[in-house]
Amino acid sequence: MLKNKIVTADALHTRKDLARFLVQEKQADYCFTVKDNQSNLKEDIAYLRLNETFPPQHETCEKAHGRLEIRKIWTSTDLNDYLEFPFCGQVACIERPSEKIKTGKKYSETVYLIASLSPQKASPKQLLDLNRGRWSIENKSHYVLDVTFDEDRSQIRTRTGPRMMAILRNLAISLLRLANHRNITEALRHMAAKPHLALHLVGI
Image 1: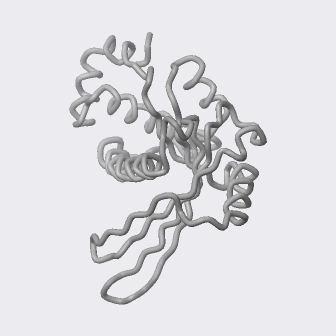
Image 2: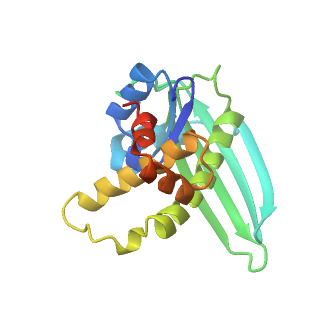
C-alpha cells in the first residue's frame, strides 16, 4: 500500500529505523520534519543554511485568516554523504515570516526537512507543497485526536506510555487516510466491526 508513495511525518517520527523501513521494505519515500529531538541533524541543516547566500529557490506569498504569510525554501544535496541518515536525497530549510494585517505584529518560523527524494524527484516547489500539505493534514489530525480519540482524557500517563499511544494513534490516522478513508470516526467503527480489515490495512 505504501509502494511509490511519499510519507510525510512530524519530528516525532524522524527516525533512522523508520526511514530504512519505508525505503527498503515498503519502496516508499519519506519527507520528515527535523526538530530538537534530532538536534545534531537540525544543527547541520541550520549551519548549511547560514552559509548559503543565494536567494530562495521557491517563494510564495498569500493572504489568509487576517495574515500575510511568505514561505521561502532552500534545498541542498551537499549533506547527503555527510549525514548519517538513511537514504537522504536532500535537505531543506523553510522560512515562514508572517504579519497580522490588523495589528502589524510580525512572526517568523523556520522549518527543517530531510527527504529521501532526490531533486529530480522533488523540486523545491514540490517539497514546499509537501510540507504545506503535511501541516494541513496535521491540523486535521489534531481534531481527530482531540474529538475521536478523546486524547486529552486518556488515563495512560506514566513513563513512555503517552508517547507510545500518540505514535500509535497518529499511525492509525495515517494508515486510514492512505486507504482513502475521509471520515476517521466512521472508519474506526467499520474496522471495529470487521477486525480482519484492520489487519489487512497493516499487511497482516
